[in-house]
Image 1 (tube, rainbow over the protein chains, first blue to last red):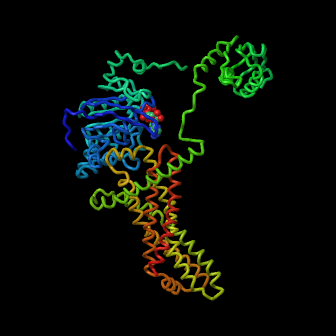
Image 2: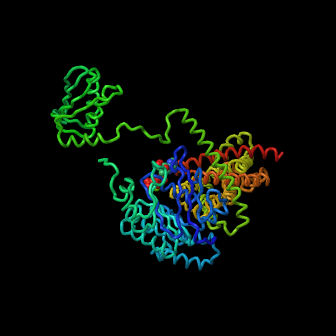
Length: 258
Length: 379
Ligand SMILES: Nc1ncnc2c1ncn2[C@@H]1O[C@H](COP(=O)(O)OP(=O)(O)OP(=O)(O)O)[C@@H](O)[C@H]1O
Ligand SMILES: [Mg+2]
C-alpha cells in the first residue's frame, strides 16, 4: 500500500457531473473529506446518495469532473493504479455482500490471500483478530446464511477492514437493524475511526447516528442536483436557515401531506 | 346488499347556471363506475357554471366515492374546471374530501423503461442488442486475457474453485450423460437394424452407431446436457452474486470478476467436458452393442471390431477437441449472461434461461462450422 501523506485530503471531488441515461443527478458537485474525519452523506430518498457512493468507490464513472482518492484520480487511473486505490479502501455494502458460498473466515481471508504473502497460519490469526474486533469471535466456520442481519453487517465490516484500509465506506449501516444493534454498530464505526485513524464515509438517513458519530456532513438535494448544506450536524441543526435542512434535523415533514 | 344503499342522484337548476346536485345512499367503491357514468351523462348536457353538491342524504362515503365527486370539477369533458361547493357534509366526509383535494390527482405519469410506441420499442431493442453484443465482446476479450494472466501468476488461479467446478460439471453429470447416450445408442441401433436386416447387413449397425455417436451425437448430446445443467447454473450463480452486490464487493476489493468468477468455471468445463464426451462415446456404443448382441445375434467381439474399423483416431481426437470448444462456449455464455443480470430475482431466472438457449444456439452454429472445416481437412 502506498503510504499516504497526512496533509492531503483523503477524498477530493471536483466539478463532478453524473447521472443515468438522460437524467442528471449531480451538476458540478465539489467537496473534500479530510484525513481521519468521520464524514456523513445525507439527504432525502432518491437524491443520489447511493449513486455518489458508487462514484466514490469506482463502480460508476462520472460524465465530467475529478475524484481523487488518496491523491489518485480514479476517473483516469489505469487498472494498476486503480488496484492500488482499491487496496487502500474498504466498503461495507448495504446488504453486507458476503460471499454466500464461503464461511466467515474465508470471506475475511479473501483479500488477505489475494494481496499479501502471509502464511495460512498468520492469515488465520489475522482473521480471528478482525472477527473479534467486530465481536464475532468464534464464528469463523459459520456461513453467512446462518447469521442474523446485524451479524452479517459486522462480518462485512471485518472483511472491509481486512487490509487495514485508510478509508472505509458504509452504505446505510443501520438500515434494517434494531436501535440497539444499530447503536452498537455506530459505536464500532466511531471506535475504528478514533482508534485506527481510519477516514470514514457514511451514507445514512439515521438522525440518531448522524448526531452521535458525524464530524461533518454534507446534505444532498435532488432538485438542486448537489449540496445544499455542509458542516457540523449540531451546528446545522441550531443555525441553518434552510427549510429543508431544518425539517430534516427536526424530523418534520416539509409539507403536510396527510 | 340492502335496497336503500343504492345511490340516488337528482339534479336541479338552469342549463349553464348553478346546478344543485343532491345525492343520497351509499357512495362506495362497489358503485363507483355506475355513479360516475350516471353523473357524467346527466351533467353533460347542462354545462354548469358552478356546482353545489348536497350530501345530506348520503349515508356512507368512502375514498372512492369522494373521488367521483372531486373529479366532477372536470365533469363535462372540456378543459375548464367547474367550481364546486359541498353542502351538508358530515365531518367524516369532509375529512375524506379534504384529503383527496391535497393529493396530486392529475400528475403526469413518469416515464419508465416500458415504452409503448413501436418506434421507441424498436430503437430500444436495437440498442439493447448492440449493448448486449458489446458486453459479450468485452467479456470474451477479458476471458481470453485470463489464461495469459494465469500463466504469469499461476498462484492467483483459484485451483480449488476449478476442482469444485470440475466435479459439478463432470462427475455430477456422469449419470445423466451415460443414460441419455446409452438410450440414443439403443434407439439408433434399433432403427437402423430394421432397415439393414432386410439386406442381411446387420453388421453395419455397429459402423453406423459408432460413426454417428463419435462424430456428431456424442459431442452434441453432451454439450446440450452440460448447457442445461451447468450453463444455467453458472448464469444463476453469477446473476445472484450480481444482485446481492457480491460482484460489486469483488470489484472494490480489486479482484477482476471475470478472472475470479468466470475463468475457473470456463477452465473446468474445458478440462472436463471432453472427458464426459468420451464417456458418452462408451455408453452410446454400448447401447448399440446391447441391441446388436441381444437382437441381431452379433458377438461382442465382432461388434467392437466392426466399430473400431469404422472410426478413426482422427475422428475421435477432432470430436474431443470440438467438445472442448463447445465447453468454452457454454461456460462462457453462461457466465456472461450472469454478469448481465440487473434488478431482481426475475432477472436471474431470465438470464439462466437465456444462457441455455444461447449456449445451444452457439453449439449448433459451431458444430456446423466444424462439419465444414473437418470435411476439408480430412479430404
Ligand atoms: N440504475 C439506475 N438507472 C436509472 N436511474 C437510476 C438508477 N439508480 C438510481 N437511479 C435514479 O437516481 C436517483 C438517485 O438514486 P440513488 O439510489 O442514488 O438515491 P438515494 O439517495 O440512495 O436514495 P435512498 O435514500 O432512497 O436509497 C433516483 O432518482 C433514481 O431514480
Ligand atoms: Mg440508496
